[in-house]
Amino acid sequence: MNLLLDTHVALWWFGDSPKLSPRHRELIHDTGRRVFVSSVSVVEISIEASLGKLDAPQGVVDAVVQSGFELLALEGSHAEELRELPWHHRDPFDRMLIAQAKVEKLTFLTVDENIARYEGFTVG
Image 1 (tube, rainbow, N blue to C red):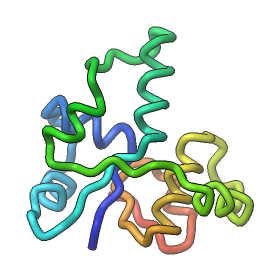
Image 2: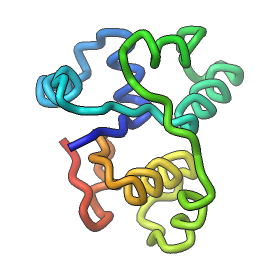
Image 3: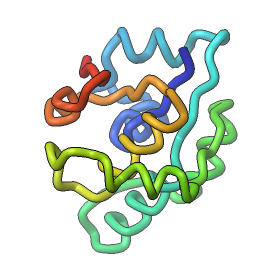
Image 4: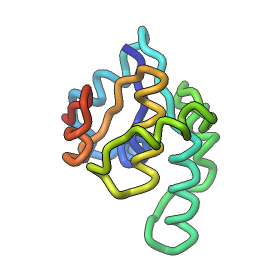
């Protein structure tokens, strides 16, 4: 099971936050898994930080690489999946992440309860 981290999970990891659940921490630490952070999360962090809505470190891409994670680009197939997603969630960034996880068959780590409404997604 390979992982895609929701934006908040990635930030909690980078900041070693106690908000990151022990279960998520264990899954991310498992060296048998590939862990991805989406370029969509980099965009979200950059926009929110530039608006002063988020206190985030500079160099998110460097943090991804230093953590041993892989950067997942938004591809055309991910964008096309957005058309098929039910509107359980209105946040465009989360919708793009959900589409990426579905297309790439990745386990999506999040604590966002709205995402559990999508078929095949669990929150924890």
